Amino acid sequence: MEFKSVDKIFSEMDKKKEISNIKNKLMFDIDYKPDKILIRNELKKVIDDFIDYAKLGIKQNIIIYGSRGSGKTLSAFLTAKGLNDNYSIPFYYVNAREIPTDIKIYGYVSGVKIRGLSLDEAREKFDKKLKGKALIIIDEADFLKGSDALYHITRYTGANLMLLTQKPLWYRNMEDESVKSSMQPDQVYFRDYNADEMREILLMRASEGLKHYDNGIISMLAANIVLNYKSDTRIGIKALEILGMADKWNEEYMKSAITRAYMEIEGETLNNLSDRDLIILSALMNELDTSKAYNLIRNMEDFSVKNISKSTFFSSVNNLQNLGLINLIRKKANRFYTMEAQILLSDESIVTEKLKSRLL
Ligand SMILES: Nc1ncnc2c1ncn2[C@@H]1O[C@H](COP(=O)(O)OP(=O)(O)OP(=O)(O)O)[C@@H](O)[C@H]1O
Ligand SMILES: [Mg+2]
Image (cartoon, rainbow, N blue to C red; front, side):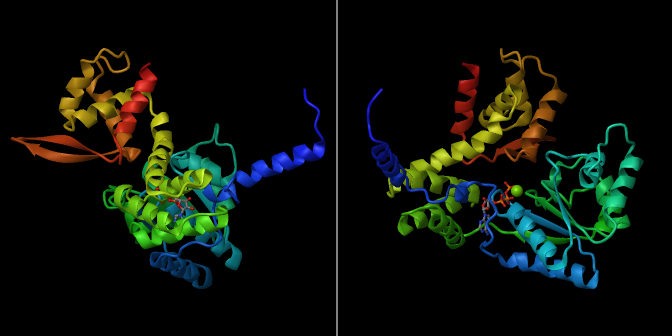
């Protein structure tokens, strides 16, 4: 216990707040959707299609491709909001990672419980909801299981579809020709941001979110993210937050902030992996050839992989590919084909560290 005047406590606590360099923490939330964004030229094509849809009733389905953190989700939201604000056209946002099946999509959009409903019944509810014009956004569309919803929306409803994916070959490799012929999408490619664009995006967050910052270090941060982290804006924004909180604007601290930001963001994906998937990922890092990695794995002592069947192994490898952690390439070895993994992590040491902390 201590005796103090309340005024004194006010002034002490007030000073503490002053020490913080953060003006608005929201600016560093990855899911925050700012009103003003850096407009890519590619976005104008999307807006043009939307205006045709709203004013002339011309449906034009759209697929947006782009790597991680290239602004697909943000752009989809803001253009959908624009469509709604200007033409009162409602939009529905579905993330296929969470809602992957046709029946779940019907249920989610129509807002009814699908338990006990057949696919036909769920589709009917969906149609009731979608009487007029509407936009349906399916994010992470490569996680979709089934194509009934795609076919139905494009062929039998007045709604416009917008699909987002990181996978440039997703649509091309789609086998269902009937879906393709009814979808006929405009395919829009979001190229990776260059260093100037990345700098502008980060400067915007800095000016809104921080009291002081250093333009030179932010330029270097932007260049580093573009060069070493595939222009992933999420890592840039997180690193900026770490730098801003410490309020240390030098090159060395900037580099360590990037490493920490990367660990935090990529760490999320790895934390959600099962032990088995994580062990398999680490085996693939040592042995890119999947058949050889399989032999390595099944002889391991860890119970989650010991004597693992080939099909379980490959379903795990597939999952790693879907999560964007690896890419599989067919390679010819002598007279046979094998699958080789390409590791997509910018910093592989994070896997070893996660594995160590799990197996302790
Ligand atoms: N043009 C931009 N202007 C302002 N902020 C941006 C811009 N592009 C991206 N961002 C910000 O970068 C972060 C990543 O963007 P977003 O989540 O839209 O990427 P994405 O392409 O959907 O990535 P993923 O493939 O991982 O889903 C978000 O915090 C977003 O607000
Ligand atoms: Mg996204």
